Length: 100
Image (cartoon, rainbow, N blue to C red; front, side, top):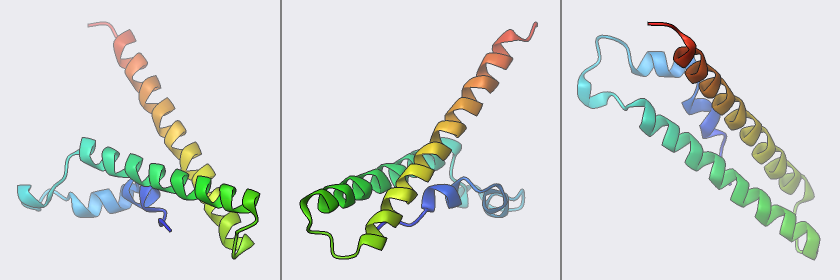
């Protein structure tokens, strides 16, 4: 089962620690790669959630609590991803509205 790595990878304090000014270029990852990793983690959580829901529907679930936790993790990570997307779109729209 996937951890909430998407949230960790988007954490501001973690990004600032790993990307301080004194670090070498080889240890840095770009924003696009961090975003791809976060989206991959969200996708993994969605797959786990779908699997848990199908297990519940077929009655083959072994631990109902773990299935409910997987579904909740997927829901929360999807909401976070949508909020990040909305903020990015709003920032882009604001930039395009500025006069030069």
